[in-house]
Amino acid sequence: HQQRSCWQASGTIRDRVRCTVLSDYDDVLPAAAAMFHEEVGIEPIARYGSNYRNRVRSMVSEGKNVIVTNNLGVVVFKADLGISHLDAAQIQGVWVHPDYRGLGLAAPFLAAACELFRERHPHLSLYVNNYNDRALSLYQRTGWEDIGQYSTIILTR
Image (tube, rainbow, N blue to C red; front, top):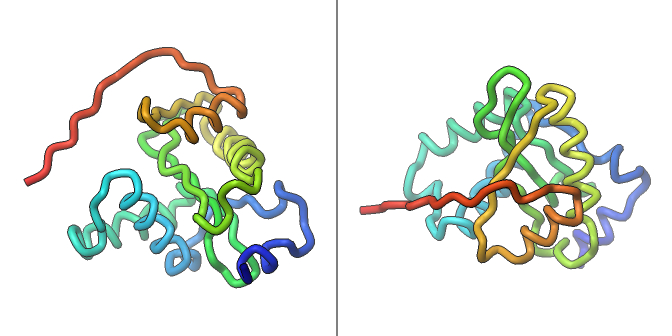
């Protein structure tokens, strides 16, 4: 794949993981929408239109996303800060581009993303669906501990 070879340029993994700035919006939007669709089963841009685009733009401009891009500007990894208060925040929206899955990149990318997030919020949490075996494995490999079980109910009409 061209995207894989483009990623294999110089630089360590930690050098490639960074917080977003507003100029990243056009690159982050498709990744955010793809993650949302995979997780929830809804095409967010088609369903929510400008409300979704504005939410992503706000998060990008506030640096609430950590991303890795290849040399073509395609987002190959992202993680987001969800709700946050003072020194605590929740990580959400962890996603790896389908062309980069299975290459062993998710764990080092996530570990580096957590380092960046901890600069602002030393206490991090996340939640994961109990059927998401790949995510559960990733979180275990990167040192996360299961401390509780919750239920989320998503209603649509």
